[in-house]
Amino acid sequence: MTKRLTVVLLCWVTVLSMGVIAGQGRADAARCPDVEVIFARGTAETAPPVGLTGLAFSTELRRLLPGRSVNVWGVPYKASARFSDRRYVAQTAIDGINMIQRRMERIASACPRTKIVLGGYSQGAVITTYATSSTPVRLPARYERELTGLPPVLPTSVAGHVAAVVLLGAPSDRWMRDIGTPPLRVGTAYRGKTYRYCIPGDTICNGTKVGQPNALHVLYGPGPVSVAAARYAAQRIR
Image 1 (cartoon, rainbow, N blue to C red):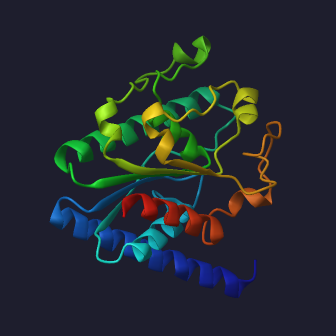
Image 2: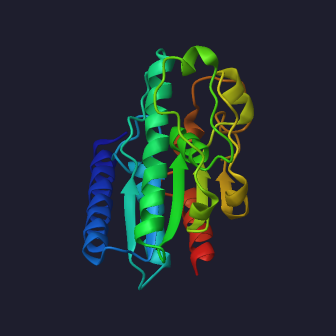
Image 3: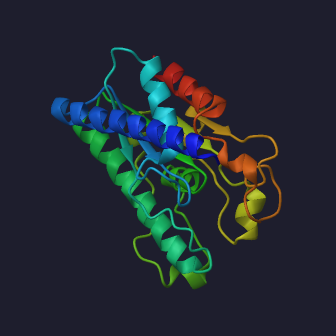
């Protein structure tokens, strides 16, 4: 990456981050925004807690919803890359699922007119999907014995407050099976409002056996995929 491109990218991230922070301030002042975006970043993704992909998605969503207040909340979970320690990664993922569920319940209770948009990229798409599950998330017994806070199933009433779920680069069933974890199944109450985005050739989501991500897996940030995801969510809100 050239020095000039690096500087431009850093400036772009800074501007978007300021926009997200400003949006959070306005939403807190108003208490209940029109739209609450709950976004989980990908593994070790830059610009935490929302991540570069979440920044791109939420910026475009704001542009598509003029006159609406849009609060953006990045899930403050580890998004760990310590895959050699599967118990640690599983625990941090469980922590993230619980964070999403608590936020959903709080918004649904305190701000019943607020439309919730759930989003996640890569590992973030995993925990977002599990947060909506219609059945308890079950892991292999050898892991469950060492884990705490296994997430519950949310009341179906909470789903009524969710306008859209967007999953970007979510691992395929084969990828999840290869690492010994349950497949990703969006809960029944969320299926009609969920869209999964997988760039053709992305080896994380296209059904290829487990392995390191290829270059296509990092293209969900600024660009056509995040724009398409924002359009889908906006159409569900209008």
